[in-house]
Length: 233
Image (tube, rainbow, N blue to C red):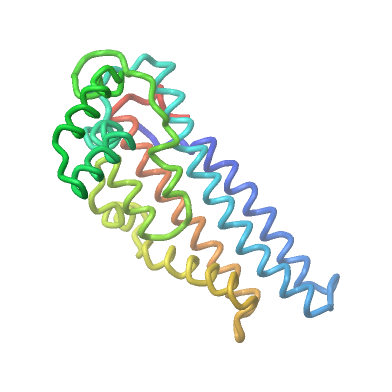
């Protein structure tokens, strides 16, 4: 099936194109104030970083809403997604306390109280999905860093996601994301880096667009093969 852009990617690219237009204006004859030009460049990078986070929210939030609307059953979710959702904070807290105090009686009592939780239905194949927080899958991994992208996609069954993204994009997507993330971090601490031009900034931002395009294509294939194209938004 031919790839179809997600609504999330369309919104991301539209917003980024608007940001790049502002950069072009700031570095044209319409503006000759150096400090304004530098501030626009810094703002462009920070705003593109924020738009990446919004893209992740839109993409995975749309997936979550679609699988509910389509009545997807448990076995069609990646097993890593099911395993992650079974690992509820309350379960983690119970085991953390047990590791520290070695109080088995308390652990069993706490787990006994949790047995009625509907999230345990995720362990059974072929039944309707129980209610779960889709945001818990991505909310702590939205920031555009290679580490976050790796952890996020590992939850969806991609242990080596950059190998896949590199094959899709025919380039080193991890290097592109690292380059953008390093620039954003440097700007957050020291402002406009010495020696970087508007062309350099635009190149880094366009690199982020390439990464998003590769993510979008990869997740499209994943959605179509796992829960069906009707769940692609």
